[in-house]
Image 1 (cartoon, rainbow, N blue to C red):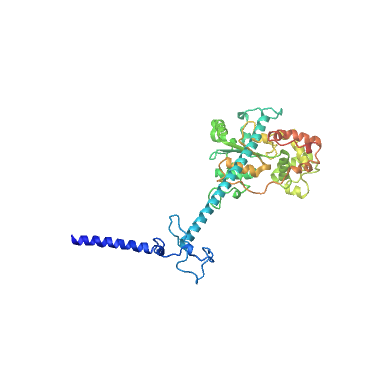
Image 2: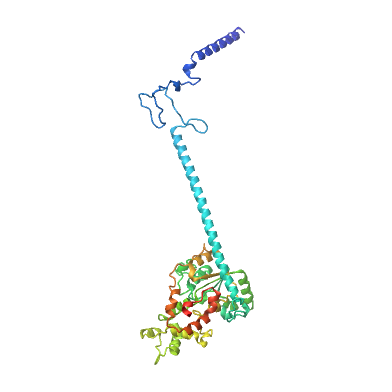
Length: 421
């Protein structure tokens, strides 16, 4: 008991002693800090505050100098390495925020641009389709063969230009001299109907498909072949596919297409076209004395070849209107693709080929599978019409226009006043 009383007395005495020491030395310890720091009020008047990055001279740096220490969010001081890491992290976050904002702005602008482009193209397509409907309904008071017949009344032999791709549910009506070689290449790639001899697999790049092979009729399934494959069900299947598949064609200024066909088939030696058409033109309209050379090469070497005027005379001959003579390269589009019977979903034009091709592949949802070949375009231009028709009598020009007027009207091409007057 005496021991316990002695400890209590000693504890109380010690406590009183400690309190006395704190009171005596309060100003010297600067509160409860264990390390003496000079009070700001004791800084000499002539001293200047220094930057946190500028060290004080070694002679004046005292242990009691004021020290400003950055702190973290938690309130604890940051050592130099932590300061660097925090600064880098802060800059990185700021850069990320800026880039993210820029990305959002670019994405928004791109979406607005695509939306505007889509709406613009949609408007163009609606105008083109409405023009066809107006002409076919008789609103424009233009009469032409086959305008009022039904699809079932079209003979099978006249359906050989409608190529069908069942895999992607596409129907393409090809028109010679309107980028049809490249569009046939695209159809070959999509249908995988031609094997590459180098890889042993179907072609995947349209530009790699040999152009002379794509015109082989055996590569393409056309409506004309349905009777052979499906018999009495062929017309029913055609109707179903026309209803559900996406149908497209590409057209061109009719007179420019005509000039392009003449240049391609009669401007250089072509044995098939010389024998079947060129020799007939020369014999009937060329006033060639004596016999004609048997081959195109011999005829061209002798300077004997059809002129554009002879070609026009041939087209205006009533006998030429027969299907077997009026070749597909200059046959009217309305006779090849039957726009009054087939409601096309997309009408492209050669004059806007690149834009139309890009839009069409996106609509068909095959733009990730195939691209439209970027080969050289046919250089025949509308501006050439005046020169090419300069030697053609006005009466023949107007008669020729009547022959192709349905194509001008159906596809919205202006009347060639410079040619007709």
